Length: 194
Image 1: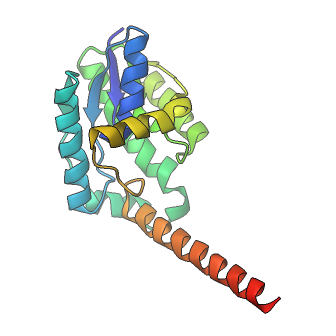
Image 2: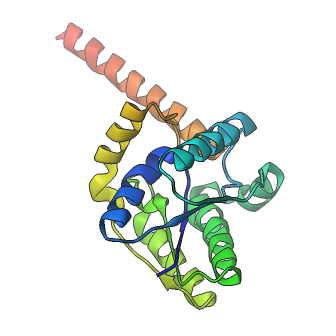
Image 3: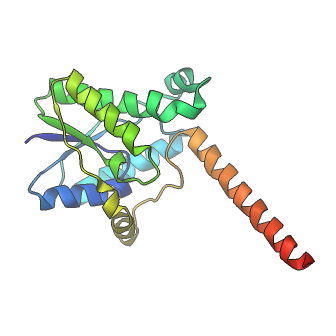
């Protein structure tokens, strides 16, 4: 099987590549992530993946498209559904298109390793894109190795991002942290008043 694996970042690729290699499958990693913002984050993730792929001798293809304008045009007005309606769809369609044009049999994605992604929606989109382009979707529930992969990535000194990728996911992270801090502060005040 000739497998093209959409790859969002080096840390998420660690377990995916290791486990596929254990099965005797040698993936070719494919970087196409025009949803990652700001540019410094995009560049850092891309460059970390370039270095990591060289260090483990895996073939890597990098599609250079920093797409802030296109991203904003496609998600503004529907921020709650941005993952499925844009981020997953645009990346998996481009992966499937590239795979079809370049003689690959199957596609998959490292997004399947993250417990923070919308797993079922992602599977559905991958299946749709594979079917549309006459490919096989190689499904693996990589989430079982998420912690293991993250630990190995830290040991290797890979850049570990703090949010999914889009600027709105970074905002969500800050709002979640703020809400968590506020809840903890209220809880502490409640305990002191008892």
